[in-house]
Length: 68
Image: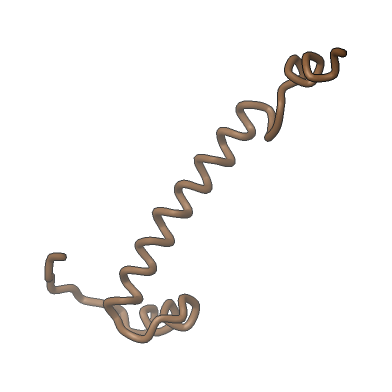
């Protein structure tokens, strides 16, 4: 992990720590970055679900599965 120098708004960092349940600035920043990455993954998943017509088998797959 790289060390770097940053100017941080402590009020925002403290508010984020309270939401994230972290106790150090490093843990807060790490957890916040993880949340951003996960948020993007969820957004892309929702877009894919909308684009592909939902979750589960397609109409064609349902018809095939219902055949005796």
